[in-house]
Length: 159
Image 1 (spheres, rainbow, N blue to C red):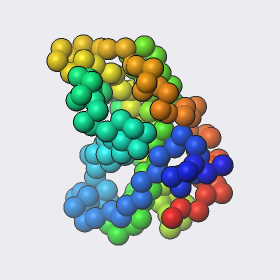
Image 2 (tube, helix red, strand yellow):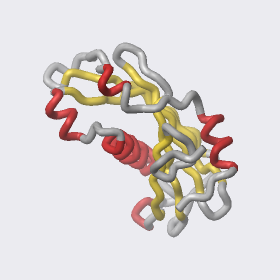
Image 3 (cartoon, one colour):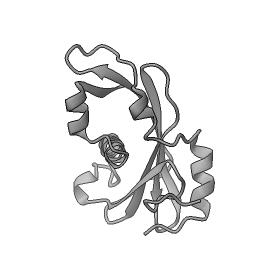
Image 4 (cartoon, rainbow, N blue to C red):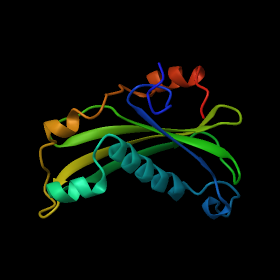
């Protein structure tokens, strides 16, 4: 089932983009640091689309910080290729939320990278963990793992 924003599955946020030459490293493919940047950008876009833009966090006096990233680079991506960055929230505990990511190449429908981030919700003034509010939790459909996203990608036609 496609989500209302055109992503492949309810709860998944999709962002399409073209890899620029600025993202390429000395090996001729996308630099590993670019994936981290894209992960942050798509997570922020997903949050904003769900009603939690950056100014809302500022008004709440809270923020999200990263405890851990894990990235598996499946195959290289190159300048000029069209990628789709997909992200979803996998769940919530008191102060943390794991978020999954897939980077998918449109041309051959191949996954180029898989990732997960463990985000910690914090009080912006103290930096200490804060309880994830119910108002935030209610804004996201949870997706339990990448298998559901991979299954949805098999039949998805972006754009």
